[in-house]
Image (tube, rainbow, N blue to C red; front, side, top):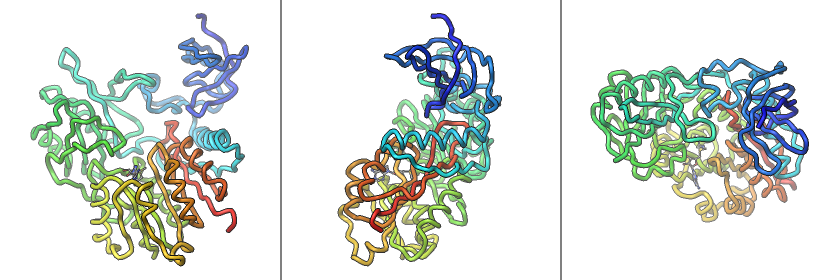
Length: 434
Ligand SMILES: C[S@@+](CC[C@H](N)C(=O)[O-])C[C@H]1O[C@@H](n2cnc3c(N)ncnc32)[C@H](O)[C@@H]1O
């Protein structure tokens, strides 16, 4: 099929440019609203056509020159071709559009809170590893919409320690027979917490030696299972060498983390968000902290003289949370429950006074809270629900299911992942009759 010249009139929530012609809707990766572009056909389904950007004929003032050499291939940074101001606007509008589509509400979304760093902001990295038939090792990320590996030496959204790690892993794996498939690593100053997925779930002391030769402290874990960000899969992961947990200082708290614990990837934005959430919660309340991870928000709420009841499914994280509460002297103010929020919540009992003082904070994974938990929340009937979300679609569905009794007080995107189309947001809901 011949290339088409198209006028880009809109942007999809995925970050593609949208053009319309003869009842067809075109999605063009890398094109910006307001541009005239040349596009090459990739595939069509009904009246939807996906295209590749061939040439920008008339560029938009919103376009930026992507500084990353892998931008066109790598599936990670889908909106690096938008300038920072437009990225912020894109996230606000995408959130608004998703809420409208699911709930039919026109919500005033506050301006996006931007990240203090727009590159080198990630302290963690998730890498795929491939050993070629010639013995060479490729390390990198998948191409957009495929399982083809883009081999990288640098990633501009990750901090420099992660880049040192890529180099060290490449050098090590070139001479070792260890069959690594993926790696999940996070850095805290010069301390590394790392989980490697190998074909047999085993690891090598020599890998630990290579890492400890380069970094101050290393907690090395291994697993046979796929190293995904859904850490619930890590049932088979085992500690291999170094300390089980790395001790870090997070916003004044002494915190211990292992690679099995969820920690936000952009610490600077996480600090801004956590402070905002703590201020919205206030003081002298009973706070339900749902999907609480290792309990950083619980610590912040307890520090502000609130009583906290947290629920988290990963046992390892709950153990960390208990230790943290003790080490930070806040154990009398936090009760941790381990299990599925939707199962545990209906079993909790609160007095009438506690119920009147109740604030719920939830921060679910990408799939959202889900019907059963939303139903349990409605039965509990707290005055305020504060919802932190990393997925506008699941947020919109959960909010829709709350709208018979709750109204949206505020909604705002936080740019936790600059250059990517991921949207983190904070929503405050209050009871309609309060
Ligand atoms: C987005 S993280 C938030 C963690 C924490 N609020 C933080 O900021 O560090 C989601 C957490 O929910 C946990 N989780 C996922 N599904 C769960 C469920 N059904 N019940 C309880 N916890 C769950 C995950 O293990 C993860 O720690």
